[in-house]
Picture 1 (cartoon, helix red, strand yellow):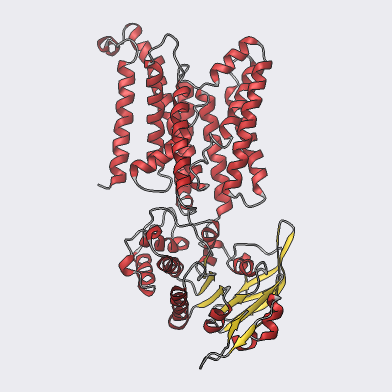
Picture 2 (cartoon, one colour):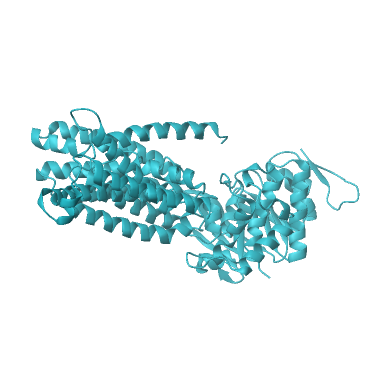
Amino acid sequence: MTGFTLDQVDVTFSGRPVLRGVRGEIRPANVTTVIGPNGSGKSTLLRALARIVRPSAGRVVLDGQSAWDIAPKAYARRVSFLAQNPVTPEGLRVRALVERGRTPYLGPFRPMTDADRAAVEDALAATGLADLAERRVDRLSGGQRQRVWIAMALAQQTPVLLLDEPTSFLDLPHQAEVMQLVRKLNQDLGKTIVMVLHDINLAAAHSDEIVAMRAGRIVRSGPPKEIVTEELLSALFDAPLSLHPRGAADVPFVLP
Amino acid sequence: MSRAAASVGALACAVFGLAAALLAAMGEPLDWAAVLAGTGIERELLLHFRLPRVLTACLTGAVLGLAGTALQVVLRNPLASPDVIGFGAGAGAGAAVAIIIAGSLDAVLPGALLGGALATALILSLAWRGGLPPNGLIIIGVALSLMLTAATDVLLSFSPGIQAAETARFLTGSFAGSDWQGVALLAGAAAAGGLLLGLQSYTINRLDLGDDIATAQGLNVRRTRGVMVASSAALISVSVAATGPLPFLAFLAGPLARAVTGVGGTQLGAAALTGALIALGADALARSWPSATTLPAGVFTAALGGLAMLVIVLRQGERRP
């Protein structure tokens, strides 16, 4: 069971504060979604959890241990990260890209073993890519390509999976497909998932907990029912947002 | 046998064949009976002129091929070779200053190394703040390269005639003055560079998914990039000291090696062999050029490289962003 504690985290980019004293908990085995307006620090928060950006003050704590006290490879065996807009190398095959997920377990003198190959096959199977394994990644559709990236992160076999806007550039059916996959990974494999989403309706429908951010701070966090309210969202986005009931679902639908 | 292994074999055969042809057939044909008997001028000619010249071409080509391909992959851009982004220009300027001060070629090696190191340090310090972003580094490097070339020209026009002529000849890059000392220097650089790059290539070849993903997979992106930039600069500086600048050779070897083997990544062996082949080819062209004045090899690598750079830039433009 792996979760995070954020302890007064400050992040600055060339003198400009991006995160200001962020504190909070990310609970293990939950799907947690970070929402907020552009420039609120959502992606930076995720990159701080991934140990990509170093806080100028405060600590990111993973299971009681400060993230920057853990060696990079050891950290990469516990936390995997999918960037918002990853570079797809020309000509790379699906299986070869998924094998990259094994990077923290290999080295110049440590080639792939049977265990590594099994992890890759499991990741391909879990994302429904077994039939596409020999295809070129740059020739797949957007939805398929997103599944390949998720498979790569899965092959890393980490208890925590961080996803930065996994549904951007996808059409509606593919957005739903990715969200169902995320749910499945959380329920079947018990993974702790933290993602950044722009779409509040997707966030509300697929998260156990929502973290609302604004101007580098966490405004509030809690289950979707508590966060998705007209007052909180309108204040968060500085725009009047209204809620509409939607059938049997717990959480209403948000419209501008 | 895989296509990659087959093409490395073919490249090695081509290098060996061209080197043998240059040894045996360029200039006056050798009387092999006399060479083997160890008599007369023929043996001297082979041992002191032709052999060091061919070996210098092979090793310089290999060193430049290694320096180029590693930097291109680590910075994810085929334009990012040490001869395009200022490391070579720094070494050239340093060597020129050394020739003008010393009045001879004696201090060329320290001059080139110092010039290369200073230029690299300047480029790195300007690009460091953002965590060495590849494209920022390339643009800063190209700008510095142009400034250094201009500064070298100014230096040439202010220096006394004999030194200026010596420097100008050095700066066109040629294998004509090769000796065993240079061969030993280049062989050391090729061995050390090959070893270091070989050890780093696991990491280098895994940077192509972007810095964030590489970092999240446990790789130290910034350190790797720093080490590779420094090694690439050191390798090109040694090669400049040995033969003068050979424009675009480092730039050409990597993309050609990747095209021939059909595999991405550094392709160190194939790139070193491709570099050697280009250098030998340039020397063969230089020596067989049908004119009274012999053209230096650097002229041919520059002509070939300029053309290839156009092709690469045009192809990059066609690809969707």
